[in-house]
Structures are given as C-alpha cells and as structure tokens.
Length: 502
Image 1 (spheres, one colour):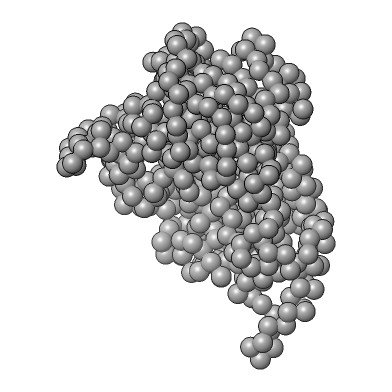
Image 2 (cartoon, one colour):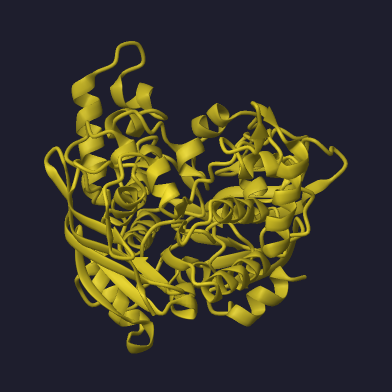
C-alpha cells in the first residue's frame, strides 16, 4: 500500500500548554487507522492541524499527501487536497434538504443560477453508493441521527475525499446503524480511501482497524498493527499505567427510601397519544445505585426528565421524596426537593461552554453557596476549588473556560455543579458517554464514593457492562414499560438483554 498521508513532528502550543509534542502519524491508501487516547491526549488538536482549522504557521512540523508537502491556510484548502473530517457534533443544517446539505457552498450552477435537477441527481447517486434509500429532497431534520451521520459521509464523498477522518462516529448510533456504517466504511476502504478513526470504543477499534496509534499527553506513544495488540495493552499505553478492573468494589449500606415513583406515564409532546413512559414504578434508597437499562427508545431519558420536571409532554403519576409526596413541575422544583440531574448531552444542557469552570459549577446552587441577596466570589471560588479537587478536574484554575477542557473534564464539571446543590438524589444520564477509559474509571469511583456517603443515585446507561459493574439494582425498560428488575446478584447480560428486548 502507498503512503497516503504523513504527519511528521507536529507540535502545537497554546498559552501555557503544549497540546502536541512531536507527534507522528502516517496513513496508507485503503487503510483503517485508529487514533486513540484519553480525553486531552491531543487527538482533536492533531486533526484540526490536518484539516486547516489551525493554519500553517500556527504549528511546527510537516504534513505531506502522497509525498507533496502541504501548507493549509484554510479548511477549504484541506478539503481541496482530499481531506474530509466528520466531527462528533454534526455540522448539518437541519432546515435544508439532504442534497442542499451535501453540496452546501458548492451547488452546481450556471450563470449564478442553481441547477436543482443536477444537484438532486448527483445527491441521489451518492446516496445510492452508500446504500441509503432516501429522497435527496428530504429535510435533514426529519432524519434519525444515524442517517444524518451517513449524510455527512455522503457530503465528504461528494468532495472526492481520499482521507476521511471520523471522530466518535458511533456515539449516538444504534447497533444496526453501526453495522450499516461499518459496511459503508469497508466499501470505502476497498476503493482506496484512507480512514483515521477516533473512538473510545475499543471493541470497534479492534473490529475495524489495520493499525492503531496511541497518543498520551500530546505525544505519540505507539503505533502497531491491531493484530499485534489487545485491549489491555492499548489501555495501558493510553493511561500510562496498568488498568485492571475499571469498576470499583461495590459495598453500599442502604438507608431509607430517598425517592419513590408510582405509576409514572409520559406522552410524546408532538403526538400526545403516544406513550413514551408507560406506568413505571420504582424506588431508590439512600446509598444505593439504581441502574436503568434498555435499548434506544425505551424511555429511559424521558423517565428521568419527567421526574425532574423538564418533560414538555403531558404526564401523570406520583413522586415521593423521603416519604413525602411532592409536585415537581419544573427543574427548579426538582432542585428545591434535592434532585440533581447530569444530562445526557453535557454541551447542550449541562454547561455554558464559553463560561469558566467557576461560573458553571456554581450555576445551579448559587444562592446556597454565595448568599441569597449578594454574591460572594471568594465563597464561590472556595466551593469550586473544593469540588474540582474531589473530582480531580484537570485545569489550570477555576477560571479556565469550560469549553477548552477535554470531554472527561467537562463531564466532571457537570457532576461538580450538581454536587454543589447538596442533592439527596442524583440522576446520571449516560455519565461516561464520549469519555476515555481513564476518565470513566474516575467517574465510576466518584459514583461509588457518593453512594457510600449516602446519596441515592439513578443511572441511565446504554453500556451494559457499565450498568452491571456500577449498579446495586437494575430496572430494565422496553418500549416505555418496566420489563425487568434485578438485584446485583441476579443481573446477567443475558437476563438484562432478554428484558430489554421484551
């Protein structure tokens, strides 16, 4: 195979931080090359160098494609050289059609007039190549997240991309959508497209990869054929230490019931006759971790949102906090009743990314931390520094802008925000989505510590090993209904999956 891409001695510095330190990466034609590392290891920064986000002159080192040295000044120049990057946060305009998104900014036109027939025809051909049975005139906002991901790939192929970078492409996909995506990637590989695949899901990495490059603390610590490595070796290279069982030893002493939910039902907002949660009842005790399992669409997040007073659709049922019936019709009411909620999408609902760690951490509990009438910056700073220390948040200071942190550290800031409200009950919705194995281990340890301190925790997770490894009891949902209840001893992968599939 011919060398398609060479990145040699790439060094990139930000004020006070060396994000990349002489990183080397090469990609062959038709190769599937995995790039792995902990959050903050430098993966995204390296890809921003490759794609022209950081123009030549803002970094040291060389990039060459098929032997020709490249000095990209813009993203467009990188695209014209055959590089396409599909980020975890999709860049589609949901109000536009599939075809309009694919050719956005590059619409076929004559004398300034768009040739709509040609655009739809070309889009249809690309969709057919990707085995997507979609009308190119369909609005992207009407597609599922998996189909949107494939539209992004069609957009990349429309640019005749020879190097395709995929950043956590399966984070929000169902198993069937993942298999569809992998089938398409295999076809692209057969056509000679070189792919750099960034993922924290090591099962996928080993399933698809020819070679694996590991970054740690901005440096290349190893590149080997995937066939010569195993997961333990990769994890050890990623974190710089041997990692055994990432789940803590669980031995919780339960107290009284902290939260009881009776006959909760929630309806879809836009289709008020469709039940998303159907007559679900459960309880969780102080010091207990209740895991909620189920396939995508089972109603897990909707259940937590309804209890938290954040569900817009109609709903019914009863909620009791420490034996007292409460009416929760808003998130403020939930917070006032001692409930915290680490949401599934931290960037949209959990954080204000352009604000500091301090401002984010004190947001939900400001009046208790700082005073009811006048704010006290020293008190806020002391509280934030305390929770940052407990959660081992890696940042220069509490005044660091949250958007500059790695995903794992952003997640810790969200958890810290809710801990500063002194909750009795903490909801965790996909608490480790999109973070690396080292950060996951720290989050699991924190969940265990909080339970040992008497906090009642309800955790939703799509990762079955996570549910089994962290939970004291497991509630399984299928199509909105409770179909299984297991103690830690009773829960097996087979039992939980049988209940999850109905």
